[in-house]
Length: 85
Image 1 (cartoon, one colour):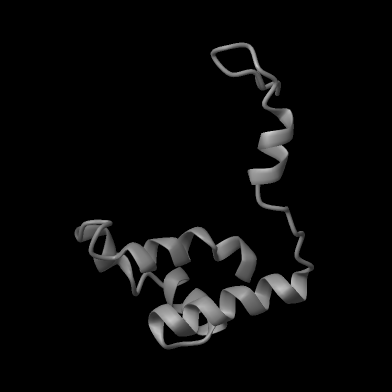
Image 2 (spheres, rainbow, N blue to C red):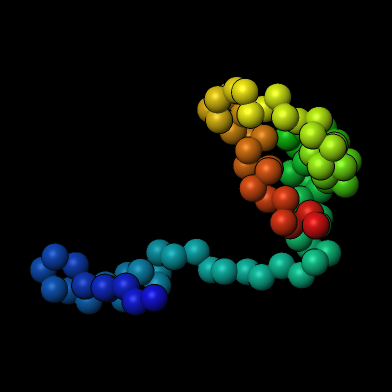
C-alpha cells in the first residue's frame, strides 16, 4: 500500500511521520500470552485461560446486549483474543 507523504503545500512529510509513529514491537508467543493474561486479569479478574474457556462456552453473551461504551474494556479484551490463543 502506498501513502502520499506530502502535505497540502507539497512539503515532504516523511521525516515528520517517522518521528511521530510509534515503533512496532513484535511479541513472541510467550509475551503475547502474558499480555493477554494480564489484560484478562485487569478487566475481568480472571486468568486469560479462564476467560477464553468461558468466552468459548458463551458465558459472556450478555455483553452483546449492552452498548460498547458500557463494556469498552471487555470489547478491547475480546479484540486481543488472538494474543491468548
